[in-house]
Length: 173
Image 1 (cartoon, helix red, strand yellow):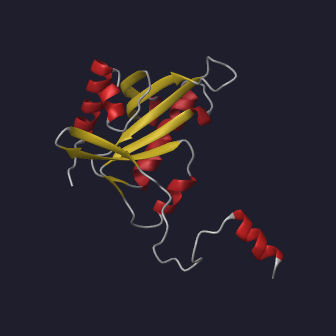
Image 2 (spheres, rainbow, N blue to C red):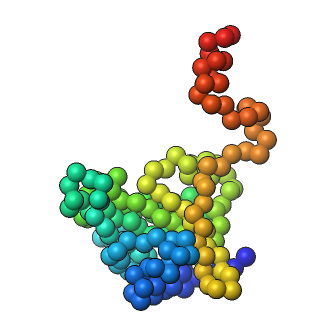
Image 3 (cartoon, rainbow, N blue to C red):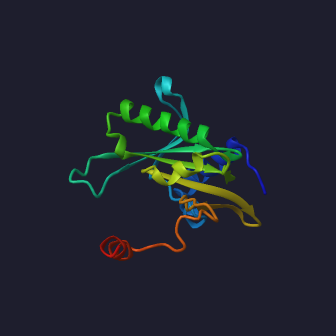
C-alpha cells in the first residue's frame, strides 16, 4: 500500500487544477470545483489544505456560494481527521457567511480507520465524501468510498428487509 505525503497529494491536485482545470483528476475519480484555493487560512479555525468554490445551480438563487473543503491525510482517515475537517467547514461557513449546508467536506487518505466506533459515524454525516488514494503505473487513482460500514456477522437480521417486509412484520404478529 503506497502512502503519499500530504504535501505530495496536495501538489498533485493543485498542479492538475492549474494546468488542466482538474480534468485529469476527474478521469482518475476526483471532481474538483472550478475555483480552487490552496492553504487557505480560515481565521483561528486553521488552514485548509485546499478549498474549492462554485455557484449552486440547483438553488433558487444562482448566486449562492458553495464551498468544498478538501482535507488531505497521508495515511489513515480517522475521527481526528473528520473533526479537523468539521472545524474547517464551520470556519468557512462563518468566514464567508454561507449556511453550513453549503459547505462540503471531502477527506482523502490512503485508508479508513475501522478501529473503534467512529467508523459507524461516517454514513450519518451529510455533505461529506471520503476518498482513498492509490498509485498505479499511470499515477494517482481516487476511489470514492462507500461509507456504510456494517458488522460482518452482526446477528441482527439475516437479510436486508424492504419497507414492505417491515409492514408485513408489523401487521401480522
